[in-house]
Length: 111
Length: 114
Image 1 (tube, rainbow over the protein chains, first blue to last red):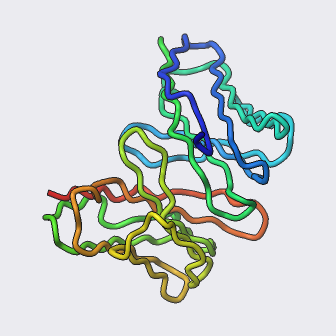
Image 2: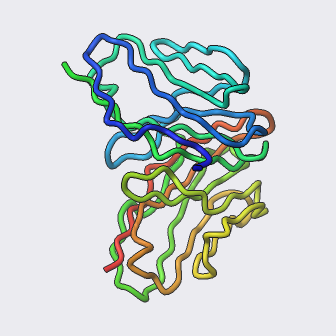
C-alpha cells in the first residue's frame, strides 16, 4: 500500500460544476495535509493546507479532513478551464517536516 | 519577486559528468528542501535543511548526491558521475517554522542526461 494514494484520473468535470478530489494516507501520526496544483512543466503551487478535522474554505476551494478515516479531499466550486491541472496531495511524515506525496490526480475542466 | 529561485532552469549534460544546482529560498525561511520529480509522479523527497544543518536525507539518495547550505542561506545540490536515470526535474522548496510547514516551491531545474 502506498503511503499517500490518489486516483490518477483524468477526472473530467464540466465548467461551472464542482470538482471533487480525494486522497487517502496510511500514517495515523500525520498532522499536516496539503493540496498543491501543478500545471504541466511547472512546479507545484500550494493552494490549501489543513491541520484539523473538518472543513476549511478559501474562496472556491474547500479542503476536508477526516483523520479517523485517514482521508483528505479538495472541492473546487464553479470549476474554470484554468483549474485544469494535476492536483497533488501531500502529508507530513511522523509529525516531522518531511512530506510524503501522492502521484496526483489530473483534472480536466471542459468548457 | 521574493519567491524561491533556482538556477539553472535547464541543464543538459553527458553521462558521467558532474552537475551542480543552486536554490535561493524565500529570505526569512529557515527550512529548505530538495525534491526530485519524474513524469507522472509526485515529488520524491531527497533532503532537507534547517538553517545550515542537514537534518534528513532520503535513503534513496546515493552517495553521488550531496547537498550543502552554507550559512543557512542558499543551497546547492551536486550530482557526481551523472547517469541517465538522474534525468528529472529537481525542485527546491522552503518553509518557515515554527508551527505550520507550508512549503513553497521554486521553478525547478530540469536535468537531461544524455
